[in-house]
Image 1: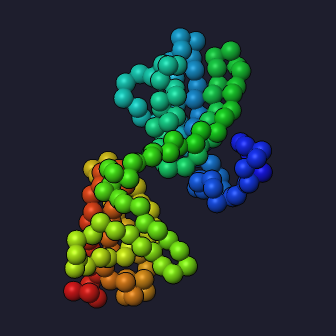
Image 2: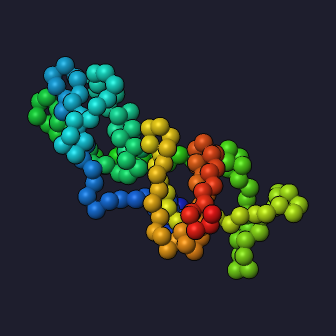
Image 3: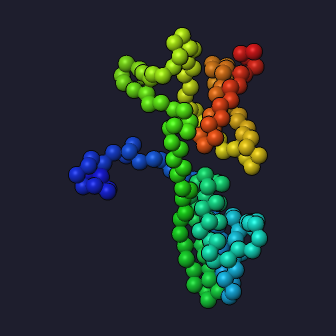
Length: 174
């Protein structure tokens, strides 16, 4: 039985797994009498562009959760002394397969089958072993275990939103 549909069977793998750290990052928001916000992330001031007002709260929380790539605990303290606590999760970005040039592949006990390649074209097989978030310059730095690079010296980096593909060869492959 599914949580959303009583007739559908419930399968844990149907749900996307969210990365949840043991201790959630804490976003502390203080709202003053005029409706201005003071935001801190893990007790450090969170710098936002300009002055923040109550209408900016959802956008700021979404930005923080997206930047961290994980759920955050939010504590809002109003000027009258009331408090509100919530958990904000990053919104999932669904990238259409066409944007990545992806084509559907058939997986079975006998392997994987996909079409659309050029005849005689070498086809690389890439497994996702890690995920990294690019920095504000669009650059990513990834450290992989040397044993993994010795066994698999070619590394493909794929930008899920940009569609950028980068091929790196470890020193053992050069």
